[in-house]
Length: 229
Image: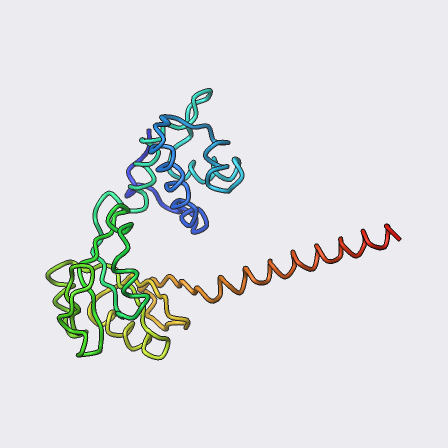
């Protein structure tokens, strides 16, 4: 059994950040017809240690059953409820460049608790153009989207130079949750949550690890050559 999310407090941010990975892994098990999994199996699928997984899930009031493990569907529901995914969250994507187009066409939003209700851009030349079945709207439509559609999350897919202005308009319209794809840091009030997705930063981190791997392999090759001599 598990308590209602509204009755629990103090789930650590690090745990919240891992919950989507657990949900992704559970969805994979469910798609393969697997009804229950051990903590070791779920941890391996999510890429964490089993002790960390068990501690994370204990914050949800879920401890599994000894000898049986976790019931996949029930645990997926628990995590979905904790993340607020048992309802659809209206989302607007701002910036209809290449990235905005790709995000608008992404079918995964609908299956993960998010409903794209609007696409917006500052360029009048794009207004009324249909992208993924939705017309591109001007930025002054934001207030109406919040009032009429319950817009909850704004996704910024603009260049860095205009991201802060777009962010300010979202905040002024009443949006308090923002996903930022622009390569910049946004300044927001304390009651606004911003998550940043910086693709170039992630590539740079991968380049770092690739370089270390190449250097290590080069060192090993040098050692092997020296031994052969």
